[in-house]
Length: 523
Ligand SMILES: Nc1ncnc2c1ncn2[C@@H]1O[C@H](COP(=O)(O)OP(=O)(O)OP(=O)(O)O)[C@@H](O)[C@H]1O
Ligand SMILES: [Mg+2]
Image 1: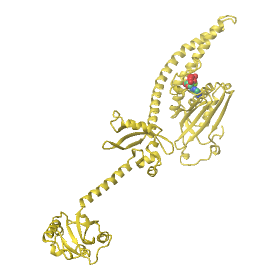
Image 2 (image 1 turned 180 degrees about the vertical axis):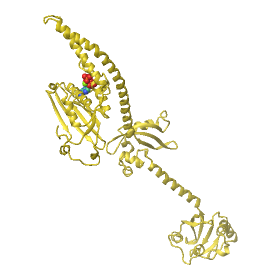
Image 3 (image 1 turned 90 degrees about the horizontal axis):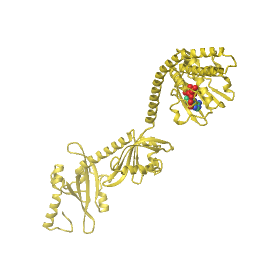
Image 4 (image 1 turned 60 degrees about the vertical axis):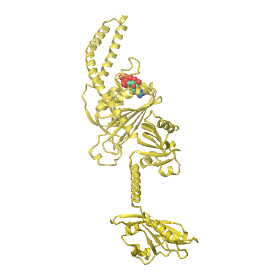
């Protein structure tokens, strides 16, 4: 390579030329005023031109057929001259096949003895493959990001110290925390659980016998949301390793609230079905037994009364015969209850107002002395609450609920009735709340069973609530205990709302009291 001050020996020039020629990359040598002084073989091959057609031209003229040098942002040659160090420039070019290609142009200065830039070697490296891989990688990253974000399961990844690195949209919704809060360090992975729970999960994760090293198979746990709500979730987790070193953890969460609620609904339904089956078979049995006992019982009562009439008043056997009559009468009551339970009577449905039904039921209680020390409170809605039901049957429901409440309160307390409706759900509700002793938890699942009673022998047959259950269901409704504690119990009777045609289309209704010819507002 020529130098004005230094004339190289033939051997040196030969050697330098060989190095330049043997470069595996296409390369050219430029003077600081951008004139091409030499190009190597690979350069000629790449551009399909001979050295003679290239040397002497300016680089901008050769590459871009331009008379003016390229912009400084595009060509780093000026920077090389100023800094006297190498610079690179990445360029998108059109490849020989017309496809997009990428070149990395490396500009290296050749300095003279004074340290000034004498020449610049520009070599061209084809980085299309690298660039394509990079683009693919960016694409894969974006895809992975989308994958994580679009997952309906919550995904959270944290580093070893519990700092949250990834929290996808589903996890944000589940926990109420945002990625922004996680980035600011306002929440850590440990803070997502009850105290001590994260530590327990980490122990399970590291336990080789539990799902294998670094893996936690589906486990139930509880998340604590930003609002402090405890959310039951199903968690699958893993430790992220770099070689043998733990670098983080990741967890996939699925909200169990809906599933658990569904399970509970299913269990309730199954319990109801088995209850209904039990009631049906017991009903048949009860009807048979009641029928069979009724006839001999009538005989016993008839003849016992005859004996009593024929005994002189001072006869000591009078008292004994009276016992026979009393006990036979008690048997008669039981038979009556059994018959009510088995409901051998046919249904006679009519359209009734729920409040009227309640009043009717209460009026059926003959022994009004029962209420002497009981305050009856009525909190009755004056909305249109029509039902299509058997008045007599539902009267029995009210009698049984009242009798149970009176017993639970030992005949002293407050009995509150509340009626209301849910128009959208097409249901009406009757609530009966007492201030009685409450139902112990262990009895709750049995109170609707026939013959379940906690009352003394002769005081209760245990058929009241099972009769109620049967009647309510026969009328398309449901009954359950809303609340019970030593301070009292609330039963809810739910029945289908009967909607008259005009009401179905009228979103707002005047109160019942204002409707002509309807039930009075206060009952
Ligand atoms: N309001 C209530 N408060 C507390 N316990 C109640 C209440 N209602 C029912 N129970 C409990 O449920 C049991 C079953 O009630 P159910 O009405 O079926 O039978 P019973 O009242 O014992 O007898 P029967 O009604 O046949 O005379 C009762 O023995 C009682 O233990
Ligand atoms: Mg009862």
